[in-house]
Image 1 (tube, rainbow, N blue to C red):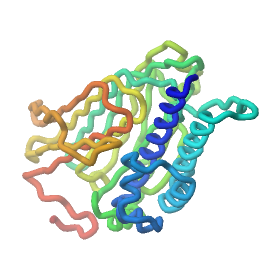
Image 2 (cartoon, rainbow, N blue to C red):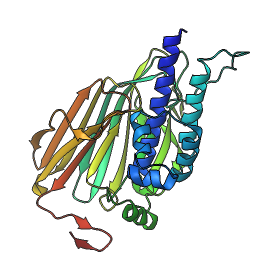
Image 3 (cartoon, rainbow, N blue to C red):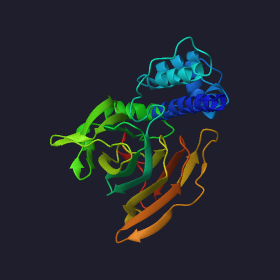
Image 4 (cartoon, rainbow, N blue to C red):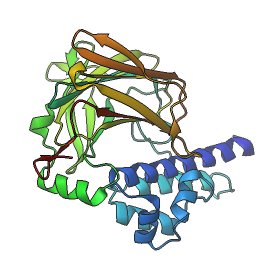
Length: 323
């Protein structure tokens, strides 16, 4: 591998670290200035790290891990960055080979050929259905796939949201998570279980047998879960964590609520800006559907769709009133 390739590898590791910090900051509902204050840094420092203007440091990684309680995810990204830097300098002996964790570690072999999300709302319950066409471009069978479930009832009001979920945490029973692949049920295992955030391994196996995703193969997986509107805010975000060829989102709401939808996108180097293309609206009987799509989105980009029901004020679930 030549020096240019090594530089690219180091830069990718730095971008992955910045994206991990941004992700956990959003999960905790912290503005950049507030996170910087809790970490003891200048208010602009977090913004510089997330945009790539400042490279990761050990001190920053330790403090971010502690404040955001990221389950060692941020620290692991720091170790990946340090390993990438070490490969650019001569070593007395080559490091022992390390098999990367699938699929969100550096060097993941998964490519998402098609990513389709549909969020249905019946007036009280949201049901999200995710369909993904995965391709194994590596040399080893893939036996599991990581998904994340994150909710925020009151975006921009982290203390209110945190208090709400402490009193009303997400439960596995209400989520009613299901997953299938090749017409077979997928077994799943919880990796992280927090009040408003879950991480789950979907396993390519069930009681009848195992069906790994072998090198060169592509396969559709589908999973779905439910969240009541007292725990789901009026937004839905798609974060691009793996190379993705096409991404699409559909939001289906009761037409009687007179919904309106808009969206924003962010990247490693830019703050939130309006989506480059508007969601397309269509009517299906008594349902109003909004669809939006993009091709070859950048890794670490985030697309956020928001909505408002003009025919119904937003319910304040903490007070039992409308606001």
